[in-house]
Picture 1 (cartoon, rainbow, N blue to C red):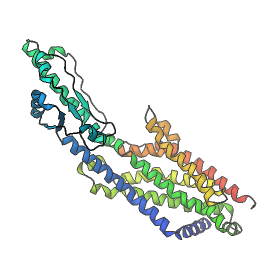
Picture 2: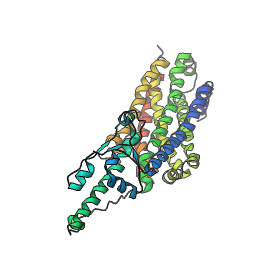
Picture 3: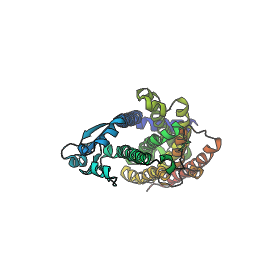
Length: 385
């Protein structure tokens, strides 16, 4: 054990030589997550402000006084469309869809003819596109109101046309609904931890080989197993340290969020500890895997290229649940990275985790770490050349 710790301490001291890189990595892990949360909070506040902005932009409202009256009775203010409103929508300089009313609106309404209105937006204009359902519902309520009045004038009860109604019930809790918005949090923590292991793994293997310090280390009477385990402890320790810094950064950020975000995003000491319990096996396993990949490289550049493929695969695995029609399932727990993404999402939703939920990811990570470390030991047992 003393040999493992001595090797690990030596690797950490070597890594601390590049203090600037390590400081940037730590600072990024601590600050980037809270900054993402603050950006989400500002976006949500902006959407809420737009939802409360009861404005309808209409081109040709002078042709429809009854429609204006309906809007105003529903506490909406009517604004005439500005000049060149189509160009403004294309350039995203107009944040509301435009309702186009024809000059024959009042005449068709009096004659009882069918009326078609145009609701113009631009799919690349997110602000205008998000307001389309609201304006459509408002116009539909005007049509329903006029239809009910015509039925009442003919002595027909409007209720007689509808014999069925549907009440929509959402079983998801507020935290479960919010977890969809904060799905980026587990992915961010995962990638921060994995990239934290990347630099250390390359430096302790290909970096030492390139600097010429690996051969003297292998020439010492220290067993190769102790050297491998020491390097693994160093790489895994740095990876978990960065993961802890990233997770801890989310705890105090809640005080800076808006009230609506604070109600949805609950991340305290319990959630932080569960995150670390979920991440620890993966951090150690992935550190071993990066060591195995980088140990066989003859230069730092070759190791970076090989590890980049592994990082790409790790980044793609969490997207499997996003593109899956069936959503999350217990089968996802068989796959490292994806399993951690699923478990952390459940923590954010407030779901209760069972001991069996941790068993499959732990077994998979243990197998990966064992095979990867055996691969590193075989590489170091080869004769130089």
